[in-house]
Image (cartoon, rainbow, N blue to C red; front, side):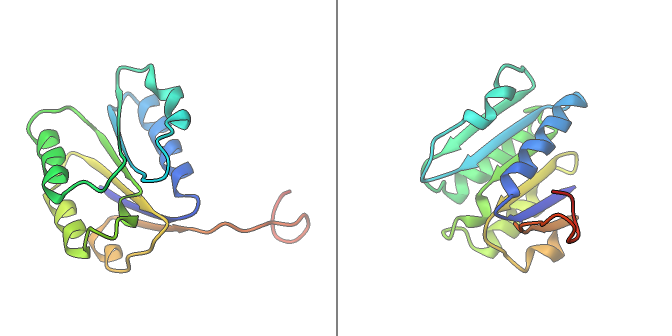
Length: 145
């Protein structure tokens, strides 16, 4: 299954999804694409577990590096969930590049792609596409405070 989450709250979604996957006994590899921040503070709760691994790219990786990552998963690296947080914001990767990554993923792998940007074409290529919107909810106006 392939998920796409876009919007300002997509990082929280991936952290929650990772926590649930780990709780179910899955092996999770979390890749963060972040030019501005090298913080892994929000991942620290997972770091002690042997079923969790992570990688942070300060600069945009080449398509070759991304293919090698998927190939390592396909050829025996035992990962159940691969989170590519922020990959949709990499302007260096074309829509075709992202489509190819999705097509090349092993069928047994749960793949999650996130970013604040919205790439329309992905909705047709993935199993689940969600746009996370930040909004303020006022008491008595459609939600709990």
